[in-house]
Image (cartoon, rainbow, N blue to C red; front, side):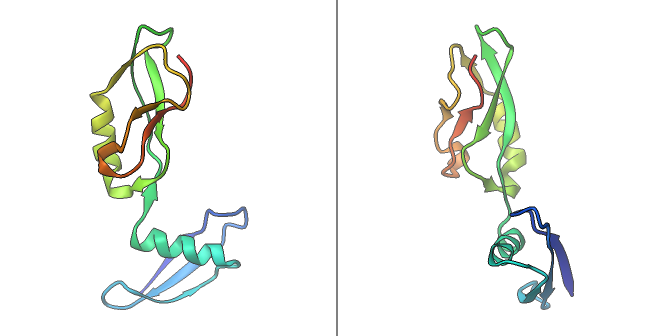
Length: 118
């Protein structure tokens, strides 16, 4: 069986093909034009991660919502849980861009940080 990924590490956007065995383990990897593509696709296949970006309620600011993001990627399977958790959050103004809103968000080791001043 094979699976194709588009590498997003650089502008070349290589189509990387993984050959997989019956246990979904990688047996070969082709199509990457640089070593970074191999690293990216292997990680994307075994443990995909995403940076969570969303908004939370802001109290006392000029805007009703504060954009926030994780300062590093979290496991892809935790993104929905993260969205549900942020729906319950609110912050009091003033807040500066880069301020940590929640340390170790959902136990991932990533911090939830403000993406703008309010």
